[in-house]
Length: 371
Image 1: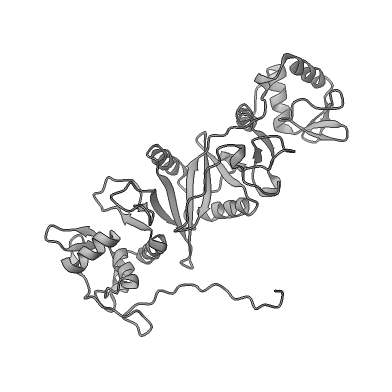
Image 2: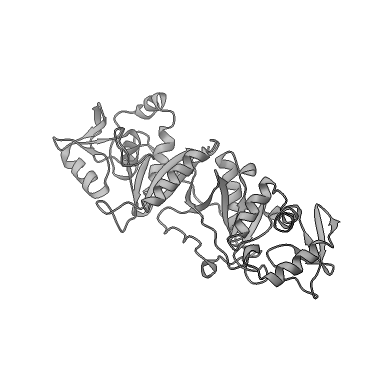
């Protein structure tokens, strides 16, 4: 209702038990160990077997990492080692609180995030995540890592991780934390474009001949050219926009037409567009959405664009910029895709404890939204 009071969502503060507002502690504090913080076997067995927390020692004790100590303090009634333990630990590890908050968020709703130990070779990320329904020893669901929102994205490293994870059937999961200690989760996966449109190489000889004749009647129009319609229609919907009883081609489409008809060299951007069009994709300008193209897997009059595509030269630098691009894309029910070393990667927001969004695998899976 219009007059209904709007209340901000509550933001967790995660108080400490060493403060009056903090949680009540039931378990004795862990003690320092060369590998972290050790807890007795009785409690350790429960945390390790039920929650998959810590690393088990030969004597039955379990060693927790500092972020696991905080997680167990907030969620398992474990006392902190001392009143000033957090401040002392932050002096040695300034990002400890960020890691602990992310661990708390990642494990919300019964999910299991198992952190990699220093000598672990299980993955090159921060840890592996299982869903609440399939816990270890079942295969993990995702390879998880984290970063602060202002950090620059190491795109080549991310690409390598995504391809390795994809080969193993894992999601590539990223937890991004801002200065308010609020966490946003993303899934990153490779995109193999495929569409139903007919590219130049598959057009009939008759259609190609008609298009070549239209090309000879070109006149400049904006940054591209204008071509006449062919029999009051246009037989190649992948290229151009019908307007004022003619077909308007933008700069990239003009370069592609010159290439397929006259053998002219392609610009770098036109070469990328031509490669996508060869896969049956239609590209339309993405200006309204802050990207290079919006990409269709069928005619623009038949379906909405599943993807917003950003080329490598315009790719975001920091996670803050990625967040802005993804938020805009998903606000109009599209998947944000960017290029890294010739490979297309999708970055999609996800919610801890919720199933991953399905990858786009064709027209039947196209999101619906306003193009």
